[in-house]
Length: 367
Image 1 (cartoon, rainbow, N blue to C red):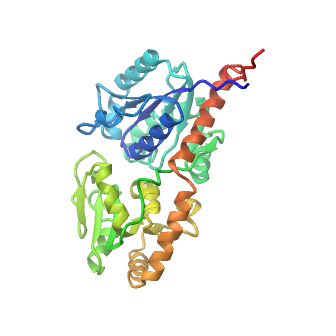
Image 2 (image 1 turned 90 degrees about the vertical axis):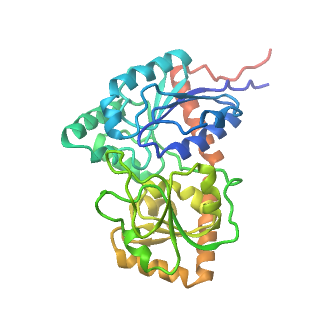
Image 3 (image 1 turned 135 degrees about the horizontal axis):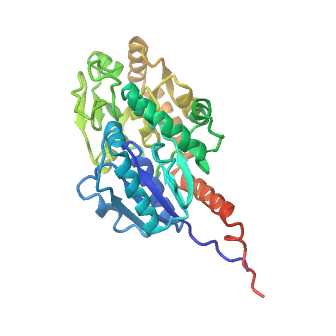
């Protein structure tokens, strides 16, 4: 009789700007169901009551950094104190694998095997710092990524970018996914939705903001809108809901007819939710978004206001087209669920552990 592999223990981080939270939440809940023990080390500030959300999830602990950092600039300034805390957490829990969702601390002297997971916007948000800060970050990224035992990205496009910029040895591509039981198409309403940061520059309205006043349907935007220094930004021409609990966004996804994401960052990180909810997707024509959603979305040039307006008007005027595109998006999203994502990560964890101790998961045979 074959013995069962012992459940791996994982330390996973939440790093600024915090856009990775929905991904990590979906991942750790499925890892728990698969038997893993997970410690979440949150470097970003927690929402009120957020600890309680994991109280009933077996094997999952949520720890808050005593030096919370909300922006890349704050993270860089507190880098030493945050690093000391992370190493103390690893020493306390002794995980099999350290799973970082950012690059800044990849070069620390970790005891466990190190998996560094790239996520849309992980590097770009630090690229908006000033020149001297970017130099420090690039040096840390280069050193840390080259020393990682495994690098994981949600797309081959992102993996190629890390290889090109930092000399990363290509690792694994694991698609992002969510729980299909949570997101399902409801009766669709005449609403255009986008979730996440909309502006690259605080002073310049986004293309969606510029187009929204000319559309016959309302454009609703969820999520905090912050500039590079973490200061609030007031959007124009759209209905901005501000920061919402993820559960409050579920009905918006399920009821909205159209979802807009012009980059893989910000709104692009919520595409699994939009796809599962059967929203017709209007996406920026980028390599990463085409890789994931080609054949299941409408693509428009990222900075072309007229193209976005024309594409949206075409969708709003054609119910059958919207429904067909929403169905295509849902089929695509169902191919990459939270469970398949967690199973792929579990396989990666086990492979890393096996490299450290080849016989750790060998089959046990009864005499």
